[in-house]
Amino acid sequence: MKKTRALDKSRKDFRHRQLKEYEAKIGIMTEDERKELYEWVATNKSVHDNPYYIYGEDGHPMDYINAIRCNRELCEEMRNLTSEQLAEFEREGDVKGPTDLLTGEFIGDLVF
Image (cartoon, rainbow, N blue to C red; front, side):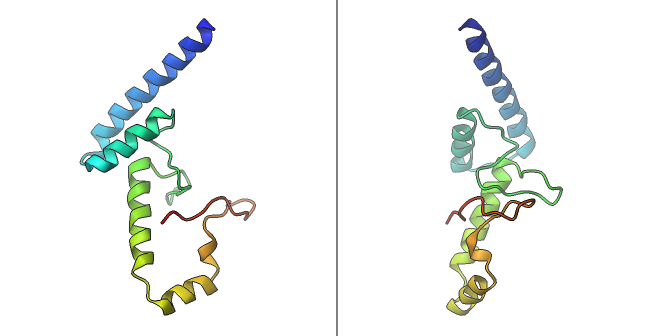
């Protein structure tokens, strides 16, 4: 039991250091972004990952703040589509959401 507690404390300490370094690097955040980030890290998740399965051009998961910003922009763009544009988007089949790059299988819903 002591090893488990020590490991949990070690992970928590690591995530806390990672969070502080990330905050210094990312710069300005809104209060909502900061709150979401802290909630994400509190669940023992990395600031260098995101819940939306958004990947950068380098093929690695996008960091948390940039991913939530990207997701918000995508949602805003989707809200502003005309019915014709939305129908075209649906015809293209992209409305299903993200897929695994290796298997092509659906891996989650778009968050609006």
